Length: 373
Image (cartoon, rainbow, N blue to C red; front, side, top):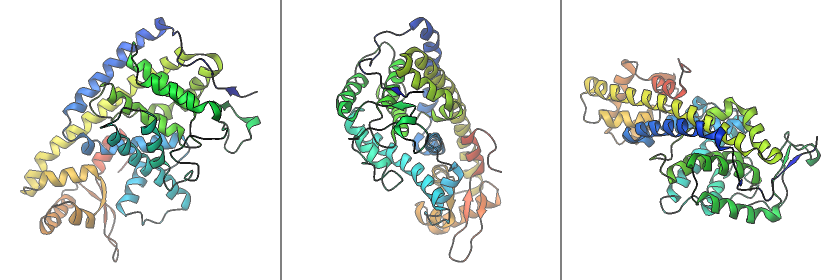
């Protein structure tokens, strides 16, 4: 079977099957609005929803073949990158950490700039910094052909061939113009710009992850959500085959409407799941605020709770040294948290190595099931 080639001259689509899409547009937008209502109500969302941000980085990277789990990533961080893991696993973990770092970089840039090619290029450079693919021109559009298919396959076995390198600058220019233009519905616009980014495949590596990062960034830019915190990769990972097939059908069959329908369902389902998890985390936080004051009798109790929410797997020395709480008070709060079984010992202290703790109730709320026991 010959490879599908990029849909030259057919972006953006001139027509869509609105009769198919309109029944999906309302529920998807309503689900996003409900999620945003909770997102707006969450105090210091970047701290409280930090586990969801890490989970999104894990799942988006998993779609591209990494095998690291959220627990492995956070435990690796807790040990300051010193944990002994196989080289392949270390690479996987570093890719997840880079994803989070790149997302933060894009958010900071978008305080002053719209989502545009400059943001895309700089974010890509952070994403590939020091990891597999770091030699593949980080932050620069490719100057050679690439293709999509089984790992390491020749072009003859490719499933899809993106736009030629010679036409790439013009193609990204059209994408840039479309992303910052008006549209009848913002979620439909988002669906189309995501598919186009994947079809253009502007970089030698990291295109899928970068394309998925653009989803919350765009939603925030057009004020669908108050913070660029929307987690969609769980749906794409669970429906990976259909995700790729729907994207392929855009170029092969001109089926923009089928892709948009799939995307709207993904947005709705993930908005509902994000809402459920955000509510669960917020409920846990509010419950623990009262309990922390009750058991610690300390003016630093909420500060300690915030620190642990942001780093739900951590080593005791970091908590005592870096939490900003006086050493004696931090040591006492840590002891109380262990005694009350709020945090659990993941690794006992050995020699100069401090103990590693996990806040399993928070981790399970982020996973959506009892992944940690």
